[in-house]
Image 1 (cartoon, rainbow over the protein chains, first blue to last red):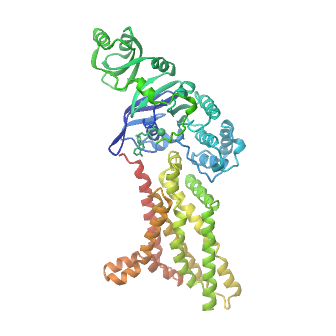
Image 2: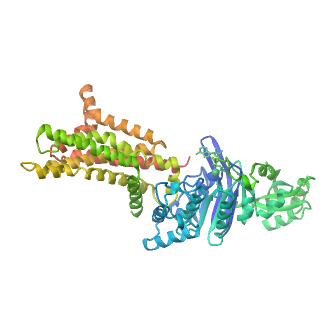
Image 3: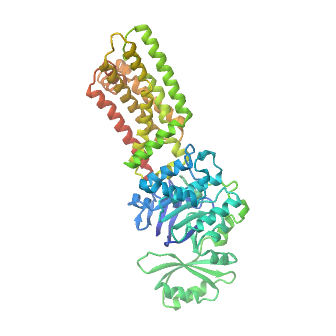
Length: 322
Length: 239
Ligand SMILES: Nc1ncnc2c1ncn2[C@@H]1O[C@H](COP(=O)(O)OP(=O)(O)O)[C@@H](O)[C@H]1O
Ligand SMILES: [Mg+2]
């Protein structure tokens, strides 16, 4: 449903994204986890067609976000970071306007607006001015707006920042309920958030994807592991099996695909202590596959985790996001 | 087209809930009403001709305040991000914003219609309809051109004040370039005279519609809207 390939983004001389590649399958809730400044917002702005990538492609439901921008945008509901809204409008007036520019037919518009207000529980405030709403309600209006027109894909940038714990739980429940019908990608810098809401996690740091995994596996890896990256030529299933047969290996994930020459990059997590590199190299070569590269992943997952917010109670306080 | 209407309608509505717009309208009516009565008392003529020339000057001060918010505020608050990530084309945003502002300008002009009405009721003999209609056309065309320039300025910054000052500066230059013409001589003078709004505005209040003047104002509108579109689209260019 979402297919991101080798995205790079330069802000002037500063490279905010380096070769970011990941996919989100239909109905999945994907967590996009990374510390502040990792490049989450940048990726989402590219995905939603707000700005172009410097190189690489991104597709939504098969439509390229750059060359088929309008078609791609039709399929996306987006909630930007900090939820920008028109303060001088009422909730209903605002949602009605958004429904219009999402080209929802007139007959359906009223029903849709009522429906999204219902599901985000904003109906009671429907006639209030948005500028008079609390942060929590604004957040819900932002979400309501994204849900209009039942888009295939929802892109939510830090949807729980600045909410109090009760509101956070509400919003997370809401998002979890969206999976299945919608494909959701949500960004966060809060570690526990992904285990509560997401079925899979992409971890990004300094503009690079450093891991793709399920929340459970991540937690396991967090307990102590070492990451090694290999580039191997050969059939994926066979190579993966071969790598997994090495004793200290706990998980093997495919870091990149889409290369046509049969070379795949694997991320291998190993137990701490005891360098597995020699064993891995021997396993690959012994299996008759071509080993092109083997290196300790630049930054171990743990270093990245240290930069994430793990404390639920301190969500977003003082986090004025870039 | 529905997108243009939606954007324009939202913009127009937001004027009517904005205190700034009310203050501007009130000032506009106050000043124009004052001028209307003073001119009437002094000239004792049932004509709006002198008032129209003054309205042109008033636009100079009022239109920057009407347009400063249009795009600058959207980029400051970030709402532009939501606008442009929906299936709305950039030109629809530009056109919608512009028409919304134009709608409000027309509303302000409509508020002055009681001046001619008074002249018709109390004027003896009845005033000439022709010059009034052309005068209003001139006032609207000039306002329309000013608004387009204001929209362009508003697309270039996130700061409303900067947008307003920039608009005022451009308008002032256009306004004064006629006087410049007298200094620099030809052929430079011909150019500045052509560019000056004053030289194109006067005929309308005299009751004459000259297509070159209409073309002049509409060209400003078209050029400014096109440049606004470019400045919006620059964001989508690959770095
Ligand atoms: N418009 C911009 N111009 C220049 N640098 C930017 C811009 N937006 C973001 N950056 C930089 O790019 C990096 C990634 O930012 P961002 O995508 O906002 O990260 P995140 O959302 O993960 O916190 C940061 O270092 C940030 O300072
Ligand atoms: Mg961010």
